[in-house]
Length: 352
Ligand code: NDP
Ligand code: ZN
Image 1 (tube, rainbow, N blue to C red):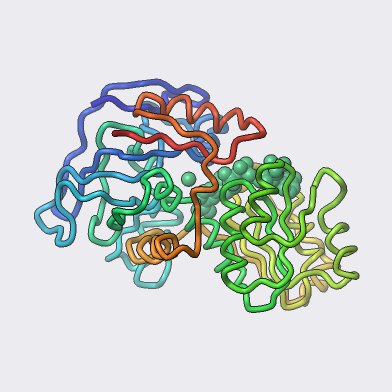
Image 2 (image 1 turned 30 degrees about the vertical axis):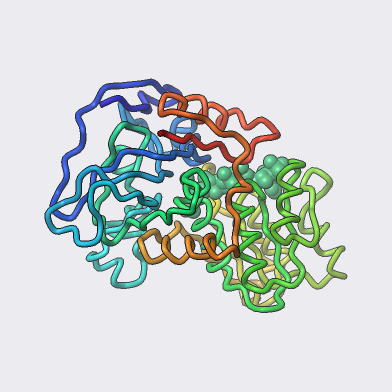
């Protein structure tokens, strides 16, 4: 089969590979919609997972089941499905403990284009099909549904990690596609004042449409200084980090109220340590909480988030700025993600 792969750090290309085999609990799918992710860029051009040779890229997809294992109960060939980026082993002890994303080891629920080949391929393998796939509702456009594979659950998980409560004042740092979904989730969960940090004009426009009340441009001064000024020196209750750099955590601690919580879903790609400012952390006694996590994945979460879309509460289709046709275009879509033109939020490739 034909597939688009990482050939080595900084190198990509089309390769031929054997079609994956279907175990009794698994499914083999063909892609119907695919999207590249900022994480694919970290993987190829920053060597985030170390050097990989001929590893098929991609973890965001909507697919059609072409083969279902003998023990799969709820899916059959021909079913169109949303495939979460994170596909845990649901019978693992980690999943039983509530941390499905770490089933089999830290971050090991992230299998596509990490522990096994990804989805930018004529066919791909899904483990634990009953536990991980969700049926694609007929009325849902596959390109839009592809945003449910990673952008929606990751952005929403940032808000869960920050434990947002009704009436909280919130900052979402970073309003790329992940952060925009955090803005939408924060509004749905009852945020009061909702600050969004970013600078791309179309991201700002869409952040406002998803419910941001204030926009902070990080080029115009330290984020913490700007937030402290706008809140009369009080700071905020909750912070979601979905973008930023090595200084972002320090800024977040500075602008967080005592008792406040930070949810991080940003990938931290550099340095050995994160600095926490001592005084602003109450000399270690400030009750300022930090949680960082990979999204949990799985079928129930996919079905519930899909239900938000089909019931008109969330429109992740607004994230899509570029559409391509055919598997062959996945390369162009990934290069777009790498080059990040200022009008890009998220590209999607639809395959007939
Ligand atoms: P983008 O690059 O599209 O967006 C990043 C955002 O951060 C932009 O709004 C950008 O602003 C803003 N930003 C950049 N630098 C700073 C800064 N110094 N201070 C404040 N804001 C800044 O990324 P994505 O939305 O695609 O992804 C976000 C992160 O989430 C990535 O690290 C990705 O790897 C990670 N991720 C994590 C997953 C998980 O399960 N935990 C899953 C998927 C992705 P501007 O408007 O100027 O561009
Ligand atoms: Zn992704």
